Image (cartoon, rainbow, N blue to C red; front, side):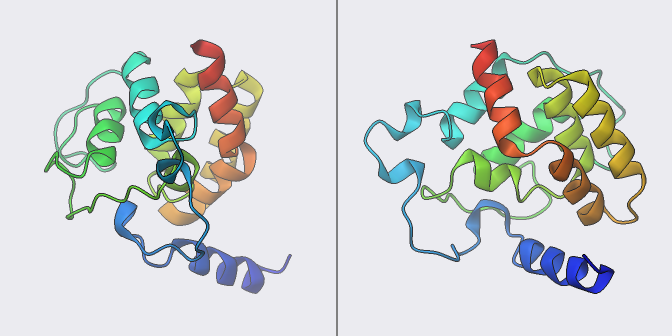
Length: 164
């Protein structure tokens, strides 16, 4: 794949990054429109519960890049997933038609992604490969994309389900 094609694809993927409030590009219903959606392993409620069960990372001083109003990436995830938390750097809207895969694929903060894959139980070789891939990228969007290329949502989801 040429760099130009890669940049176009990345621009398409990361356009409209208003977190959970961006408009869907397709009309297929996802987790929230199904019966018992909150119990499904791809729902945002399930993801929040799974993250709450994970061990926290070491707190850092407030205001560091990648943390904003948080001192841990665990808190960053939980605050980011809750549109009512008021801890994000921009307003988020509730979007009941989004699922966990959608969220994972829209995060543009490598520290969030690396923490989640590191503590969820993903194989250490994949964690290390994602760290190395991110190190070779120049922007947050490219770093995040490189991490997801090494560890797609299905791998994280399987690891989180294994922990249950």
